[in-house]
Length: 158
Length: 289
View 1: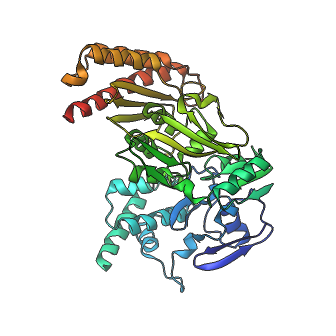
View 2: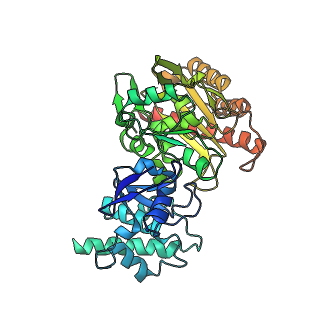
View 3: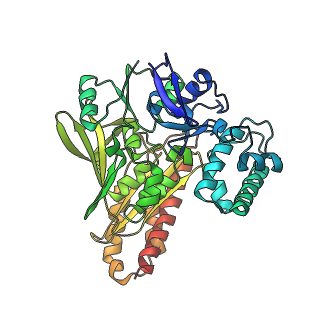
C-alpha cells in the first residue's frame, strides 16, 4: 500500500508498504531517515521515539498506515536547516551525555518535548519524561545534566 | 494482510461484521509487538485511530463513559477526580510514550491478567459497552474476563467505551515490579471505598488466569466496617481486621510461578498491598471529614 505523511514539515510518500510494517521501518528504510533507532521493537527502549502529531510515541508500535495524513517529527527534524543543533542537542554535546549514541535520538526527541511542555522541569519531571528511554551505557547522570543544562539555556533565552 | 481504515464508528462495525477475524489496532502497544515478532499475522488489521469519538469521554451524573482509545495520559490528566484508582493505575503503565498511545479498550481487548487497568476497573465497578452491527450491549466488568487473554466479546463486536462509576470515596492502586517504569506487574491490587453504599471493592491483577475481585475479603471488610460503625465514626480500622482482610485477599489469588515471580511471593505481596492500600484509603476517608 501507499502511505503519505508529513515528516519534519515535508510531505513524504512511501510505496509498497507492507500492511504490518511499523512507522519506524518506513522512516528508516523507505524514507531515508535512519536517525530513529531500531532496537527492542516492543516499546521497551524508546530509541525509536518520534512525535506523532506532536505527541511522543514509540514508532515501532505505530502501524505505518496509522500515520497516514499525520505529522511526524523525528530527530532529524530537531536541528535547523543549516544543520545547527537545537538547544537540547547542543546541551547533550556539552554535557557529555552521548556515549555509544544509540539511545540518543530517542532521548533528544523525548527531552525536547519535555522542555516544550515544561520549560522548568524538576529532576522528578525529567526522570519521568525519560523513563521510557533506556541507555545501555548507563550514562543517565550526564543525560540528566544535559536536560538541566538545556532547560537553563532555554530559560535564559526567554 | 489487508489494512482497513474505517473513517467512522459505523464503518468500523461494518468492517468487523464483514471480517470478524480483523484485528483492531488503536495504540498498537500489544498488537504491533505481536506483528513485529512474527507471533501474529492477521488477515486484516483495522486501524481505529480515525474514529475520533473513541478518544473522547463524557462525565455523567453517576458514571464516566470512557472512550475505548482515550490514552492513559489523558486519564491521568483529566479524570483523576472522577476515577482516582484508574488514574493511579494509568500512571504505572509502562512509559510516557506508551501511555500516550495505549488505552483501556486495548487492555480489555487483550484481556491479559497483567493489564494494569483491570484491578482499578474491577474495584471501581462498571460495564463494557460492546457494539456490533447487531446492536449495543453492556457487559458488566465482573463478567468480561473469561480466561487468559479471553474476554466476553463476540467475533463481530468492538469495544466502544467503558462506563465507570464515579468515585464516591477514596481509591488506591498498588503494583509490584522491578522498577517504576516499563514493568509488567508481578502482581497488582486495586481498592475502592464506596461510602455511598458502605461497601468496599477490590481488584487483583497478575495473580490468577484473569483479573479477579477478592470477594470474600470484600464481604468480610464490608461487614466488619458496618458492625463497628466505622463509616459513621470514621474511627481507625482495627489491625486485626486489616490483617484478616490482607489474608483473605492473598487467599483469593490463584497465582503461578513464572519468570516475573513465584506464586508464594505473589500471595505475600498481595497481602501487603491489601493492608497498605486499605490503610491509605481509610486514612483519606477519615481525613475527608
